[in-house]
Image 1: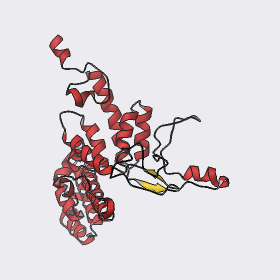
Image 2 (image 1 turned 120 degrees about the vertical axis):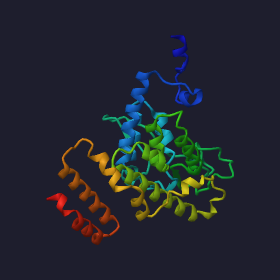
Image 3 (image 1 turned 30 degrees about the horizontal axis):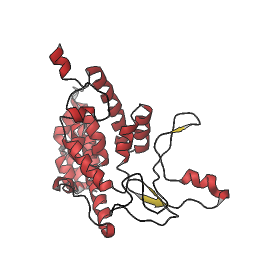
Image 4 (image 1 turned 120 degrees about the horizontal axis):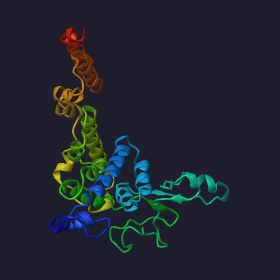
Length: 289
């Protein structure tokens, strides 16, 4: 009994699992996976704000802050007109999570001291700290490249965190490999690869447009290799193999045939290949009759 308990964590802090490489009690681990599965479901449908709010309400504000690190830095200018103050406050690009009452709970990303340097994220005297006019405020993470480097390591650490913990970082980084680990359907696998490609290309554009940023935190070659074209992605998301994952619960041949045709139509629409779909239907029409 003692040896079994020795493998479990003996303290409670946000980093205890990765820090000690010990496991949570099975009941705690199941609860953590339930929460992170919910977080990923929000990210899967593109609702990052809801994912962070869900974490805060579930009692994990530290995880919400960690995932918020994926937000690129941006500037905004607070209103100086008192008449428009209420309107400007609504438009302010900060995250405020409500819990159903008048009290606002959650994350608010405003960091600036009187010198115009960003504070709260790293020391203002840092050579990498961006200098902005005093009338502007900075939102988001201006050291997002450092966050990306750490998040990539988290996604690669399979023995320390659950797959849904890593998938949450993978959805925001992106990390196609960890997204494929939690993909259950053909659509999930397609989304994982398209997400990886789009976010990687956006990151390329972001870094190219900020050449005055100075030194960027380097990311591994595998990160940049995710920026594939749609045709290449569709070839990798093998249509026939993934039809089987959809129809394990179905035994009817007709259902299987219609599902295969529907996936073929989706694929043709994405690459503007309607002629290929018509050829597919011509070759497989008998299976649908």
